[in-house]
Length: 220
Image (cartoon, rainbow, N blue to C red; front, side, top):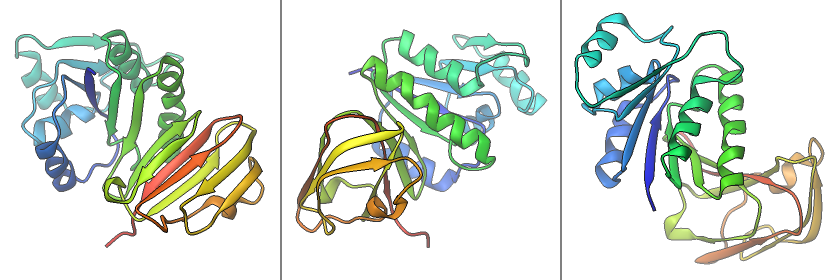
């Protein structure tokens, strides 16, 4: 399965990112506007650089423009898609079916929400995509999933409705169990927040809708 790392211009813990990349391999790397500075700080060479380039520092931009084999996709600032959306679309057209977004959760909250919604097109196309930072792994689910304690990003697992309603949620093997429970967006938010696995593996099933899943750990 071809994979893509997308580095956006949000706040990024470089120590975490370097540690993560020591254990992971990606077939393609896409830098999104000011994300090029993070790519530079990590000593990476992107395959694509995407954006309107209104936030990346000039010297970094010019240095990478001298490098061969990088594909540049410059867009006008006045556009309907965010730079991250454009990078996501490029990754999907390249045939990538595993997408990891770094720098997509820190900084401006409107950007973070936009990045969350950008995951929907990945879900529609059957790609495995997540927003990742030191504390959180965030992704969308339209079907059930088995969770393994030794593979979780952190000790907590939370579920929130992405669609207006998610029907028939059943949780087994978790500390807090559910049986065919419907969740409506904006109501009983705490029902599926900060759950934990009670066993080595646990199972989520539901009948209809899309869930936001957050695997997380407490900050230091």
